[in-house]
Image (tube, rainbow, N blue to C red; front, top):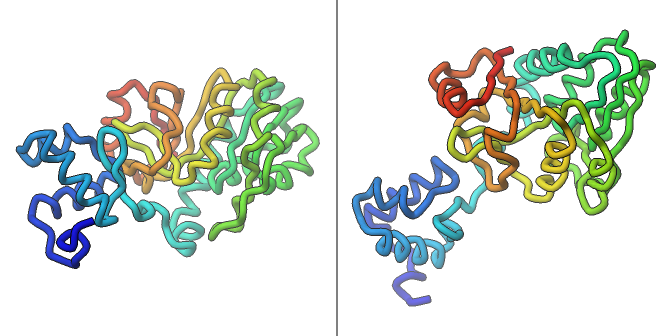
Length: 267
């Protein structure tokens, strides 16, 4: 690294615009930056390499991604309070989809936990596979539901103490033997171009295994996640059957998702 790059000098306007776009989009492509800024792809690649060396972004194949956690990694007070009512509505709508005799998969998350709590007590012969200890304990008293835990490593508890989950290694073996009717997943970002994304890379193999083990997949996500992109890819929009989000979501945001063929339900 040269002394000039190591020094805390002011960024050129083009470099600042690149950083602004990375902060907003979380992941940007070289071609996208070149078109927006009116310069060549070669120039953009040089800019990204310099900004990566200064630790202002992370250079990836074909573009760059932000170094800092995405804005939708909300503080605990926002995560556990602001969206509670919306998560409960989303969970209740998803719970109404479950029928007697079905085998379903529940991802670990606060919205799927709300779904588990809303499952009717008169359900019969329902099998639930989950990677969530909290969901398993919530459903333990429901006589019509048989619960299986996926197994795996217990993820270290983060800010959200109500999302204790199991992750690989060994967490996907049971899922590989299952043909479920539907999987219900959670995510951190929902974007018309980038699909469904997650903030934690270590959770991705479990989520993908859940998706692959079911005939249908329903994604549960509050409106605050729409338009955001996290660092780890879960699935394209085309791989998910239905998105359930809150009525607070902007119609224009939902239209961009529906234009890609995704069914969107508002709770």
